[in-house]
Image (cartoon, rainbow, N blue to C red; front, side):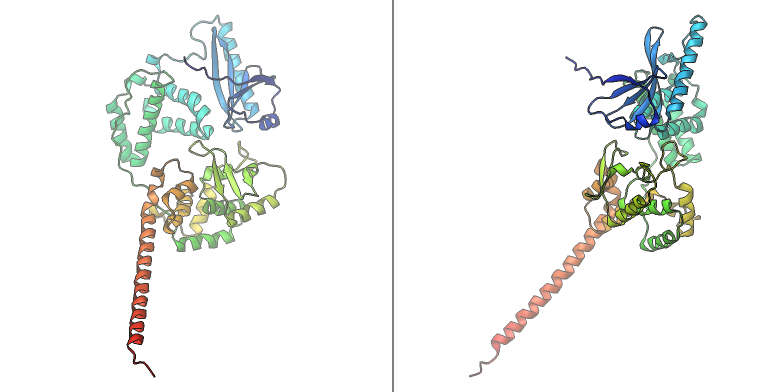
Length: 429
């Protein structure tokens, strides 16, 4: 007997931004809150803490819903306006005598185009499951519009494996092997979605079994002299947010998106830890804070002027916190001589600060398992990039131990000779 999925509680409230922020995270099952002002607008609250706006009502006798967006990236005002536009579209269709397909009817499997598939994937998977749904949705649509523009109106069954193979080869020449691999993986992912639980497509996945280009895993980290140059420029940096962000990145090894979204409620001053509620791996992570990180955070909390929940607040972003330091980082690394315009492979990225954090642990002989735990890796495969540095550190430790062994053996031999000489000395009466 199949066990039914537990349904969460449903209620109706007069939603405001403050009320949404104060809504508690449910225990095991999601909670749905409908808006009093806009009756068909709902807010879904997951046990993970994710809050998502949606529109739901019966259309042509069938329950119909549309994902509007994740809060706080999508504001309550925007969600209400979107829900109202759906209501208007439905009302216009009904006034016209309900002729033809209603505005929310999904195309049948044989008629579905690549654009339809991407939108369905964004709405029914990305917006509900991804850690940063707004950013990921933007990436999906950008991939479609930039690299798959010629296929946007093609039916799913009209895209063949040979088409994908030719596209992969062409992108490898025009945009690089890494980009070509990512686009091919994206196609494989959305087709898998269509043939899986979404049940939108029953044909063959044209992106399956395409041979990927070999990729060399990036191992870039800052050498000691580069760290000195960076520190010199950081000491002169007038942008406090950038200075503190770089310091925290080097002190914690956390991903930039997690540092951007660091909240004061996630800091434990007693335990000196930072709890990341949801990482790239869709799991929480506890980060031990070093003295350097604690110093930065204490200075920032002392300078805090209001009850803003973010460590790096931003009044101009929809999320309420800083979203990017890209331009400011470019200027800083240029001043520090870390841009290397003639050699892009040496150019230091923000993510290289995370690699630097891990690389010096490996150089110090810290085990790969411990490095993976510090970085929040889900499996050891992601940590293997540091194996070479770790082996060099272990080899150095072995050589140091061998030298020490030889020194101690030589000292013991010297003592033995000394004792032998003392034993053979004539006895004095």
